[in-house]
Length: 441
Image (cartoon, rainbow, N blue to C red; front, side, top):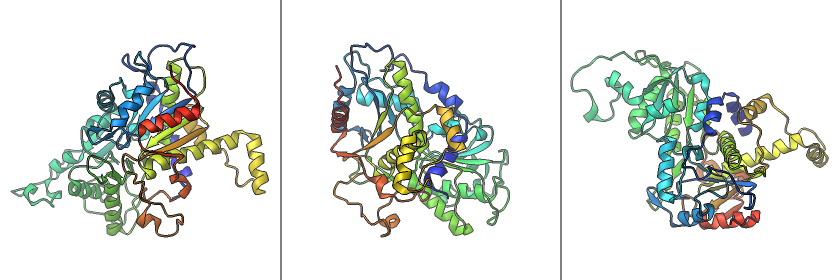
């Protein structure tokens, strides 16, 4: 796979008009409704909050979360800065997650402040009319239709139509001989929302679909390449719930799928797209929602700084720093003085990022970024263990011992270095306000 930046820029060529229309709508109970008085301080920054390990652990709220949001909401119940919740969870609708957050934090949150790992799928319109197999848990059919897919098949539907294919659990095997009920259309793509409940069933049937080119009535074709398009949301290897140690995430399921496929075929599993943190696409979409909220409140100052608060080095910090790198490269392209400085420092124009057609298409769909930086803040209430150290030498088996990122990402020590490390989210908000010299009234 080409460099990480160019890979993800390839995702941005797809249309996002539907997402853009929906993102600008803010419900009447949103803390951003109404106009902003000129007498109050106006922010030039926005906050991107991870949820699990930052605001909650499982279903239990982290005590510092309410304390933090008391500082972010004024006496009228309105946010004093634009806020977006960016989660790699993908087992529910955005509105459901917004309702959960409203209950936990005691402040009104709408779906337009929430980005799920599957939210960017609404951009992939070339797949919306195809028959797609979806894997995950929760209301997967409803989620798929909510992001734009019109012809959806679940793993359970496949299993019911082809009962002889799911054979690991002896108690679920057919008691009597049965023939396939071939009433499903041919699958044309596979979408992985998140970790399923029965891994053995999902792994078996997804492999079957990939090796039969979507036709389960045929035999495996292990030499056929390429396989059907595969889109995956949420690359988290682990996440933090109520247990003392992190739990398996969807990234662990992807590791299983990738290795089974390669063991059978001898070839690497290829993804049409990987989304959710740390994808640049997710952060670009988050910035668009931040700008929309600032416009809704009629704040005059452009949002030039983003702060991403998370608990996971390999997703939250890596993703924020990756997006920050993109913003810096974009500034270098647009600013002749910055270009000249880079040329003078390196003696070559090769180090200067070039304008790409895919960049233009991505930016035209979500509008040009106003931010020039995305700063990362790491909290110690989730996955991150402040007692563990990241080795400085990336050549010493990083992927095996430390790097929990996805297979298609490369380890870069600079990308997992947080701008700040704090105890909890309340301290994170304090540091950000202090750095921005922002005093809410």
